[in-house]
Each structure stands twice: as structure tokens, then as C-alpha cells.
Image (cartoon, rainbow, N blue to C red):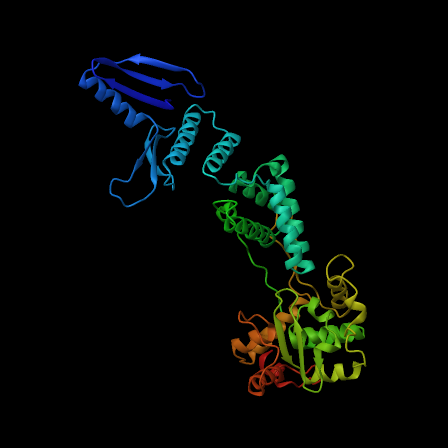
Amino acid sequence: MVILLEVVARTGIEPVFRYRLPETNKTKQIQVSATLVDIGVVMTYIMTAMASIHKDPRGKSPYFYAAFTLPDGRRTFRSTKLTDRKRAWEVCLQWERAAVQGRDGNFTEAQARKVLNNILENTGQAPMQSETINDYFNNWLDGKELASKPRTHERYSIVLKKFLASLGQKAQRPLGALTARDLEQFRNQSMDEGKAPNTVGMEIKILRVVLNVARRQGRVTVNCAEAVELPKVVANTHDVFKPEQVRLLLAAANDEWKTAILAGFYLGARLTDVVNLTWENVDLAGGVITYEQRKTGKPVVAPLHPDLKNHLFKLAGDNPRAPLCPTLQKRSVGGRKGLSTTFTLIMRDAGIGQQRVKGKGKEGRAFSKLSYHSLRHTFTSALANANVPAEVRQKLTGHADAAIHQKYTHLEMQPLQAAIDKLPSLSNHKSCWYTRNL
């Protein structure tokens, strides 16, 4: 393709068609007949096959437009976003060179970066950064360590490291080389490993978050993770405990587990939040308990049910920083020796089955319909059965979207206390709620 073309017309002299060959300094001259028709042919060739720059004849744009031929043979006009003729011409030539290489099938990613960097340098701008996929993900993870809780950072770290490992050598390529196909392969690999669809979906969502930051920062033009479909989730729902089952659990549990079970039943709190409660969270005089959910970071303020209040009153000590469940607080929730496993043993001793069902993963991961988390479902269901409004239930469980204030006015606490009072007393076998709803 022609890089430079001149038509010189002199009176009485044959015009000269002179051009420079691509990537060389050699020129050739072709004698052209000085007829009007022949010069018209040459000018048509110039306008339809060569790179050139133009101003908008309508005067609507101050920028120069580059005209060149695309690899598929179509003529295109692109704004250079430049008002300087020399710089606009340099950009036009770089685009033309890239189109020629693309037409010849020789336009590689490295050459594309070279072309773009040449354009940036010729227009007085800094060259593109060549950050690899591996570097970007690890840098993002390092930044997230400062802005998130340790457990959240750990969860992100596991997913991102597994994803980078799935890429192999491609992780050393530029971030822009990442495609939706790469994420689809990672998704399929996780499904083949027998992970639950919900878990795999969460992994893809984490990758979407990471790449969305890259898109906002201008490192990539699109978030390719958004094009990846999430696996279909068939939700497994937890069952609820009946009051007599909770009494059996209390009878089979030691003192600390009694506290944890009562808190789960009367607060609807997650096990992680319960075992990390300290006496600073408990206001026995005011009859309320406040805590921040570890999963969401949202604060919860809940009135104390008389049964839970009486139980805590018997345990209250002088150290406000002491945990309510000191031994349980030192243990992890998950794992073969974790708190969740211990709770299943308490259920066994109480004669309560887990109601395990086969999961939907390739390896058929089992799911327990009854577990400690079922106490949270029991709490919510009991309030719903007692006709407690949804917005009140959301405040008590911490599911509300709006931020929950640490302090409530007396009028705000009244409906919450009334809702808690509707829960059955585990020390009173003739609870009206129990006989009316179960």
C-alpha cells in the first residue's frame, strides 16, 4: 500500500506518479500520460485507496479525519481527535500501516501495541502500560487487603489464585488478552470439580468485580466476565426447628452452647456473629443487644427476649471485653473439627436428624436441611407466623438494605420489643405461639 504519493503536473511535461514503498526509503517513478482522463484516474486512486487526512467540510468538527482502507477493503473515515495537521497525519499513517499488516495477516498483538504506542508518542502522550493479567489481579488483591476484612480478603484470594492457575502461561499476557472464553473455561472447571452452582456463581461474580474496576480505570474497554452466564442455581432451603426440638438441643448442650443456641433462636444471628459477641454488645439494663454482622458489616440492634435476658443475667461478669462463649470464640466455624460439625453432634445427641439431601454438583455434595443456620430461619419464620411486619423482621435479622442506626428512639424500639415478645418461651411449654402455629 502506498505510504506517500505525489502527482506532479508541469506544463509541457509528463506528470510523474511517484511513491515510496512501505517500510523502505526507495522510490519509484511512473510516467503518466498527461491527459485529463488519466490524471483523473490517478486522483481517484489517491482518494479511494490511499491514506489521507481531511477537515470536516461542514465545519462541525475542529479535528482532522483520517481516511484509509480497512483490511476487509472498506474505506473508512476516523476522527484523529487532533487539530495539528502534522500529528494527525502521523496517526493516519500508523492506522494505514496497521490496516496493511492486518490485510496481510501479519498483525499480531505485539505489533498492535507498537502501533498504538507510536501514535501516543507522536501525539505527545505517554505509551500504554503493559500490565499482565497476573500483575493486575495480584495488585488488585493487595489493595483489597487494606480495604476489606481478613475473611473477605481470604475468600477473594482463594478465587483469584485458582483463576490465575487455570490460565497457565496466559496469565503472563497483557490484561487486554483476557476473554470471556477464559472465564467460561474456569467456570466449567469448577463445575467439573463438583462445586455447587451457587459457589461457582459467586466465583464468577468476584471476577466481575475485579474486572469492573479495570474497566472503570480504563485498563480494558469491556468487562468480559459480564458475558459469562452464571450456572443455574437450584436453591436448597433450610428447614426450621420446632420449639420442642430447640429444648432438646438445650438439654444436650453444655453451658456455652446453650448460650449460642439461645442467641441463634432469639436473635436470628449467624453462628460466626454469636461466638464473637462480648459483654460490650449486651445491655442488660436496657434490654438490648447490639452487634455488627461480619458478613455484611451492617449493625443490628435487637431487644432481648426474657428467656435470653435471664440466661445472660446469670452469666454476666465484670470484664466487658470477655466473649459470651470464650471457648467457642477461639474455634473456627467450618472444617471437620469446626463449630458447625460440633453442632451436628449436639443434634445427634438430642435425637434430631440433619435431613441431608443430595446436592446438585457433579459429585452430589450433600446438604443438611437442619443445621445451626436453621435457627436463623426459625427466628424469621416464627416472627412471620406471629404476623410481625416484614420491615420489622428485616431490622431484627439485619437483612434490610438501608443502614441500621446503632441507637433507636423509644418509639422505634417499641415495635421491635413487641415482635421479640411474640417468640415462644422455651421455659414455658404452654406458649400461645406454639399451640397456635405448630
